[in-house]
Image 1 (cartoon, rainbow, N blue to C red):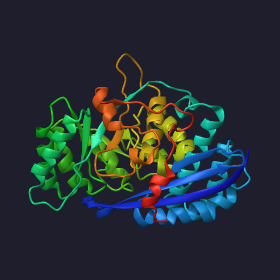
Image 2: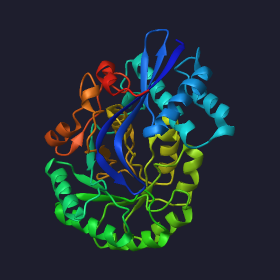
Image 3: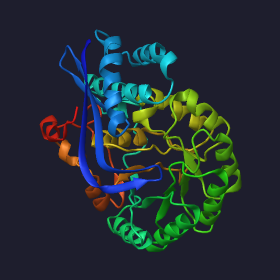
Image 4: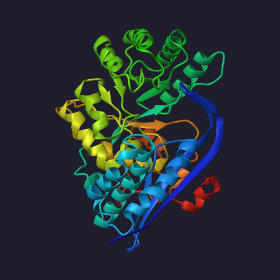
Length: 385
């Protein structure tokens, strides 16, 4: 079997303005990659990177990576990963080249599952569990005077949907952020976990102020409190706070994660598989994290192609550290507006329905590969490149 074509497609649609600590936006994007073979098997993957970043990654996929892989065996994933990485090492060991490579690698795993007749979770040696708990994230920043009330109402709605945990955004300033966290914490059941995501908005001192307020509210994790480059800040926060510190979505490859993990800069690592180098490299990061007994809870942002893939990866994770009541990783699910979920699949994942029916849990699709079939014609109305 040989690779005959690698095609990159970027989609987008308008949405009401929302934001996180770094930007406001009115468009949602999706970047899917198709790897075609001479035996008719087609794999699909997704690249992390919104907006114009997706357009840059499209060029990298088609003009840089595709020429390196045409005619190669799609099942030789380790060889192909290092062939691409080594060719691009002088031009970027992080960022967009890795995002583009991630989508191609994921598509190769999809092909491998289809060739073997196995769902991804079994190709990875699992399942270690049949389903995982889901947390619904929302509470994106908005230009509203009484954002506290708005956040509280949205959080209560997410709880009513049956999610076992929720996550909110902050980054409007330490004092305002504490009020927002208090509003959400008071609006959801006491037994429901709450994660707080700053998207690297703070200096160490401001993060410490917010984190200490969280310590009194029993927050489940404090996500990306400081810039990814501030390893000392991460490490000091881990030591100073009772609330677990998480991060890693903006890191790349096993070498990028090495110091983050070995220096105990995070209590929970959150790799973004569609960005760090794909499934092949994610397995190296997961092994490194578990070697140091650091839980891994994947970052998951994108279409239902990514959601399905992430479900497989989470169900394939071994228990850490093991026992009758082990730490179980949760699926991150975006509850805000997106047309890139069930509407783009021939057989919907229906994560909200699974959550409602199964007490807050969801399972991966068990067809070969990632287990989803994209309805490319349905997607065409959103095509931008």
